[in-house]
Amino acid sequence: MEAIARLTSELIDPNSTDVLAAGKNAAAAASAGYAYGLAAIGPGIGIGYLVGKSVEAMARQPEAAGMVRTTMFLGIAFTEALALIGFVVFILLKFA
Amino acid sequence: MPTVIVTQSSGHVVQVRLVAGVTTETTSAKAAVKAAPNPIAPETKEIAWAAGSFIVLLVVMRYFLFPKLKKGMDDRYASVRSDSEGADRVRADANADVAEYEKALAAVRAEAAGRVDAARQTVDNERNAQLAQVNGRIAAARADADQKNAAAREAAQGDVASAVATVASRVAEIALGKAPDASVVSAAVASAMEGSRS
Amino acid sequence: MIALEFPEINSILRWKDLFPTFNKIALIAVLAAVISITIFMLALRQDHRQAPKGIRNLAEVIVEFIEDGVVMQTMGKEGLPWTPFLMTMFLFIYLCNVPGIIPFFQMPATARMAVPLFLALMVWVIYNVVGIKHQGVLGYFKSTLFPPGVPKALYILVTPIEFISAIIVRPFSLAVRLFANMMAGHILLVTFALLSEALFQAKDKILIPVGILPFFMLIFLTSFEVLVAFLQAYIFAMLTAVYIGGAAHPEH
Image 1 (cartoon, chains in turn purple, brown, orange):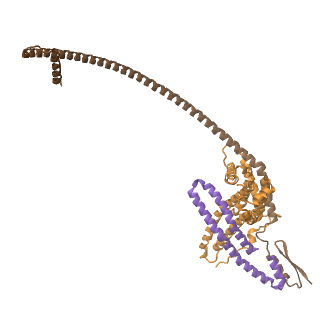
Image 2: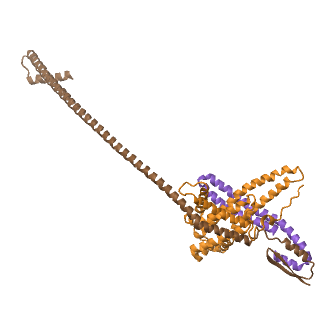
């Protein structure tokens, strides 16, 4: 990003950088929404599948429910990280 | 007069350029205002405060508070455990006593049952012996009577046979004029008696 | 209609210094430490032979939760010496998360990258040190980068993945998970609070009852954040335990 900014600022008349920055901001704001939306798809499916299977396991073996729940939370944490990275990218694109 | 314009982004120098005029100064100043610090970037002072308080908390917990609390918990658990073990022991003793009593009871019961059985056995034996004796006496009396009977019948038969033989020999003597052979007469009488009896 | 403008993001995340270098985040972090220490000090003043009640009960429940729910589930018996560390971590994170829903604080300290980043880097250093200590430098890198039971040809593929996973992704995802969860919750709360405020103060009188809807959503999200604050602290402590346990005993 910074490299592109430097390149463009050297190539283009300095008076027009404001317009360029505005265009970049608009593009970033638009892509921020896509970034988060796309990042949420996979983890959404994954967490749904994971929790569904865990409930199935708990219903089959209620005596193992504690262990299944612990493992489920760990699995959710790992899966959720992907969506959260998407959210961070969203914040970075939108506000940075 | 050339001016140097430095644009900063989150504290780092991003670009430095030489500009001929002073016209861009206002716009770049605006840009510098706009380039607010990144909301995600960590701040050194926050890291320092968080790290400081965490490390203080960790040290205090690890070396003072936690061991003391844990020791108190372990002590209490140990006392509870020893109490419950004592209760268990008392219960085990009581159970052993009960088992011993039941064993003794069973032994006594077995002995009593044995004695009753023995007494019954004795009575049975005596009864059987008496029965056998009486039966033996009855059998002897019956055998005696039977013998006497048989002897009387034999005697009676002998009498009858001799009487018949006498009569027959007399009849034959009268009819033939001479006395028949005694053995022939007795054999004929015997065969006739055999035939009549059968 | 109403004109609703979302505030500049930094105005809801960054705070003015109360005195030099000491801002709200630092205040929350210091308070978290002070509150934890106070709870345990008060708990220790009770007679330990009696059945625990009140604040001592709370402290013992926390200790047993960490022992049974975190250490025993992930590291087993040999992980018990890590209980105070994991408990400190859990308490600190929880008490940094929970101000996000406490009135007048309204800001989880973990919604700034500083706190999770520090914690994640510390965990990273600790599990690497533990791994090297237990298995030696070569043994640790061998068991991390060349996991046993993989066909030799696949090491070309597996080793770089394992390296990236163990050295880069783990601390990064650990920090980002906590940070992004709390920041997302914070931004959601801000959004719905602003929306209901704007609707309640709308010039158009028809819009005022509509403000109930975002207000209910705000209440629901607040109670959801209670759960998230606990869950994130639990997951952070749990993953720390998993990483340390995995570095100490790679065969599990």
